[in-house]
Image (cartoon, helix red, strand yellow):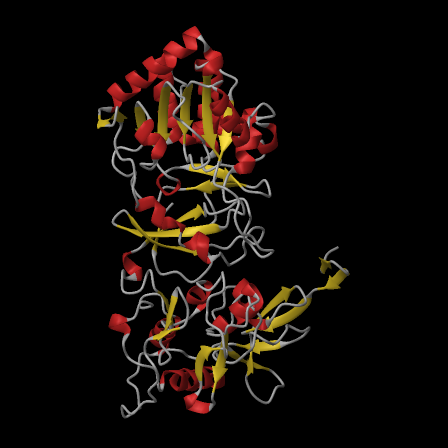
Length: 527
């Protein structure tokens, strides 16, 4: 119905109001700040965050309302019918300037060494306002500069502007009251609660929401400037939840992962475990094809792999198995599934993955694989389990194996006569393989994961593939060619399109670009 908004409890009338002389209409329940953002009117703030409650403590978002005796915080005040709001009157601008000056009064001027420089809200508002010299004579309240508050985080109490965002993340997101304010006035400071440390599983979100450089991550601290980073939209590989993220990288090295807004999956947050999963991308990688443990050319390695697998296929395909991983993309899984059935003519296709781990009812899934759902959809009802694989290896049913992806749960390999490994890391199966082909990882490729909700989500390459690594679908295509005929793929999008056409439950998925972050980011953006 026109003029109404549907809510869980029924229709609710929209609100008609005026902002800076222009009439607008908004759904009831919005705050004035949210209403201003919807129509492109910029109102500065520090303490407000769209994913947290609004305490109205910074007083930077003050606006004037006709009929009210003094400016009020727009982040806390709901819109009302016939309300007339002024966001840029002389009174409003003057009081905001005064509040900003109070915020800066005891703030250290250490921007050149602050990790937040370049993406600091205080720095931005200062330059947006007038960049005037401070009237402080240089005498400032001193507080602790390096406080180890948790296993991942260091606190600089002098930089803290007491916005309380981090406290609300702990209370409202992690549900762990790890941080509090102590003392009052200009001696007030952020600290850990009595008997606690900032060690909850979502602690690094406090670094994201901190508007200044008060909270810094130990793994990123002093390592890189924000303006040197390229931000690429992607999906966390840490578990089946599939949190949307940005990969921040420079010079083909991942420096950090940060959450990217997706209201249906992870909202504004991600867990610490997933955030630190990028380290594996740069550790102990297999970067060149190997034949009998010796580096080789790609064409030679593919030829030898095809010779070994082909001779088994032609003589006794029932002893040949193909192992896929729930860590792989949909595209890689589909390409190797085709290779197994069409080129190797085997129905012994197994799915393995990382073992189950801890979970919670916030974001973290017990399934530590990002694409279990996609793998099962693509593999279909004939897909065999890790338990089946272990049994077939122990009983000697399998004597030849094409092993693709992560192989933590494969089982004994000493009974195999032929082992070809397509792997990203130099692990035990690679050491045992006659031929090893280097596989690119999730941060290096185009592709998709299907999360536990059944949502197909896009990956973008953030860094160049390590060494001579290749995408799984490309390796499958070239191995198929060496076996007699290529799969016919030119790029990941083509594989995705074929997967979507043949796998009914992902038929509605879209390859289109992932939505970009709406959080405050000053990093360069690509993808």
